[in-house]
Length: 215
Ligand code: URA
Ligand code: SF4
Image 1 (cartoon, protein in one colour):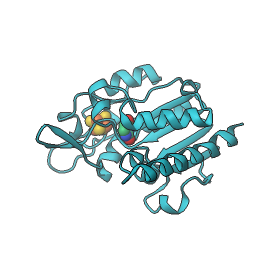
Image 2 (cartoon, rainbow, N blue to C red; image 1 turned 60 degrees about the vertical axis):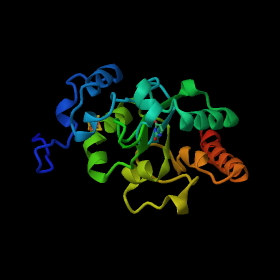
Image 3 (cartoon, protein in one colour; image 1 turned 135 degrees about the vertical axis):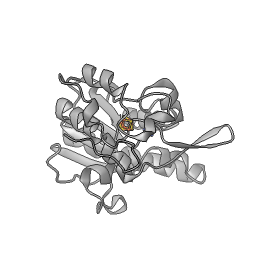
Image 4 (spheres, helix red, strand yellow; image 1 turned 90 degrees about the vertical axis):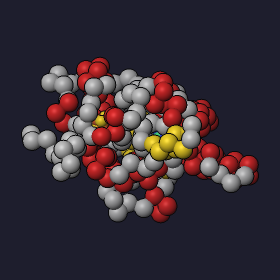
């Protein structure tokens, strides 16, 4: 397939970087060298999904954050701790879970010594999509949980409104159980402790829907 380009000479498609033999190990290794879009230039490393092929639940976030970029693992920073906490509350074991992101490199803006997350653009999401499609195909999870509007729109279409449909069991041919909820980083941005507790509880409630659908 011809490599899509943005017209500035920068490629915009991960497809040429996909390995011939595709399993989670070969994909992860190949993704480490992906230069399918411009995002690899500034980030530390590719953050590929993590979890076993036999995982029953797949979580899809937006893109790695600062900690994830440094450690090379998804959801290991503050948002990951919120996710872990909610998983524990509803009794989903992290061992049964495959966790990944729609975009595999951290996109950020430098402000002094801080690296501020930037929402990936549609063309970056499209470029990175082949990795996610392979993860979905190989893991073929029973339940798919989309964390935040970016992941939800990427997989359910740009007209999807998270505010209207969060926590619902959605009809989709991607998996038998599909739902979308807030991104756990929204909990961290809560204005005060009361709001934070409320967000935490409603996030866990959305995951409980999945736990119950699986049971
Ligand atoms: N936010 C995400 O969407 N993904 C991560 O891996 C970490 C934070
Ligand atoms: Fe490749 Fe995705 Fe990284 Fe772009 S963001 S370089 S497509 S892994």
